[in-house]
View: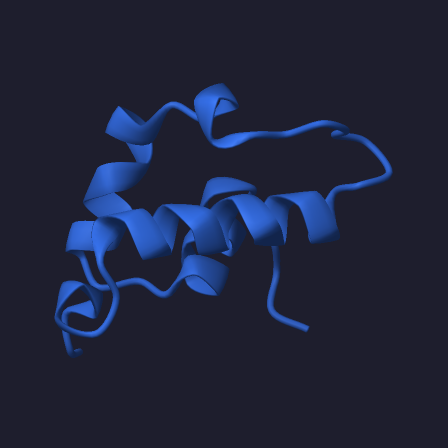
Length: 65
């Protein structure tokens, strides 16, 4: 798998993750900002090359649609 850091910077990836969390979990999580996320825990997902969508699914244990 191609490392996402080659196509998306860490900052861009973080912004995409926050956007997805806001969209996918708006009924339970409100007002989520970048400062609310434990980025040390998410960094390995980025380094593994996961897309923001894959990382959110992994972190929240979502099953594929």
